[in-house]
Length: 253
Image 1 (tube, rainbow, N blue to C red):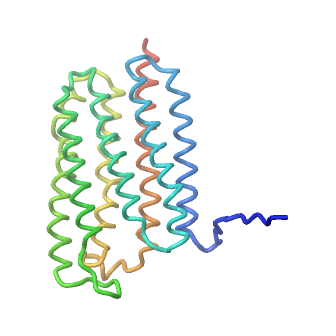
Image 2: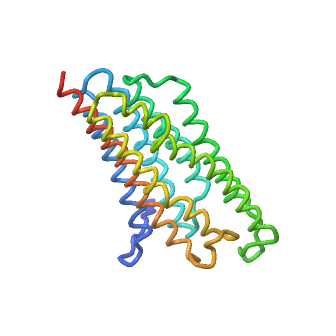
Image 3: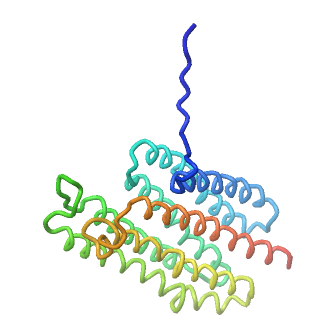
């Protein structure tokens, strides 16, 4: 009789990082099912918004399925998998601003500017984090700080543009002209997600070798813990805000 070996990932009671990898995966998978099912309960002009919300959490759930195994097997931060996830989901989160504000007159150029800013933010962040010069022992090598700062500044420019648009720029102005209290409150909530929820990502970036916080946050497990919680809150939270707007506006019909 052939022996069947089951490769089961062990989750220790004192391992919050692996726990949040698994919880994040299940939470975002469940959120996707919710958004896809609820899509049929809203008016036609909001269906695409809920579809995108479901895609965001579904893409993240798939990546978390692989990231939890990678971390459990190696104990290392899954940098490449995280950035693949973010490169797909963050532009979709920016797309949500356009879809919500399209009835208020948002143009395609508004959408592409937000998406372009998110791509700059993520590509620069990936170059800064994945290609930082390291010594053989994993410590920061020569030029690591300059490399980190250069690409971190470029990444921040993309982030600041999205932040400015949400709080003071085109997104804020379109929301004000929408004549919809639900849309205005929803865009304000998304702006808070960008300001507070997304702030954890540059903090994690600065905690890598060569970063300004590398001497303060030295344990990669802490960074992964913060990333996992932030991802679940931001992506599911974004979707719930969109769901709230869609249901509120559909109820008026």
